[in-house]
Length: 323
Image (cartoon, rainbow, N blue to C red; front, top):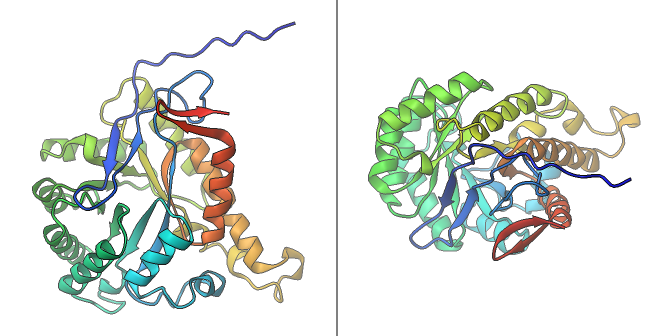
């Protein structure tokens, strides 16, 4: 008895968002017109992108098994960028300007702009630039970076419902992409995109960060919200059809299961390997939920996820097709 597949046709599709411009080698995400990975019934012109997170200052709170693989490059943005791209094979980079936070060094917007300029000089991949997430300082830092790097197509992370006007204005003025951040809530994600559109932001230049729960720490809730966003987009909702970006590394490495040494929990096994599994498992679930850009911390996690994506996709002139 043969199985006859009846492809599901949807009314809508994801927007295509291009990251990087100017001196960057641009990459495009989105454009799919079906459920994630349903390549047997839908077209996906672009496969998910894998990013590595680097920092402007030494991230002393990061787990040592992440820090050691970078061999002291973290906190030296240009050097870390080169290693992330040339040695570890990242498609793009997220530069976390954590040192600009008022409680973590309070580095100036000018210092932040200089760091991003150094990274732009070191590599040619697109960049996501993450601000300190601290209200007025966030706006000052990202606005200065946006102005200094006009035309480079940076993805500015991130605008929120409560604070979006400044970043919307600079994204439009200097030709950047804007990440809209919502607290694992479909309605807030949609409302923010409505506000951005009203502020003259082209939604073809917007990514949605739905916020991410790590494995065992809200992953199921994150998955369900992302699934609802994708279903709404495919049903024709033009305010929710932007590609999704997930900062997996930030959440996965918070889990005690990823941090606790084997000496304290011998039954949990080797800590570095266990933690990589935690990051990979979180990432794969979110890719299956529709993540188009996944930001990781450990290069080995990136390598394992890329191997899995390679087993699923052939990249041809016509896009991504299932093997």
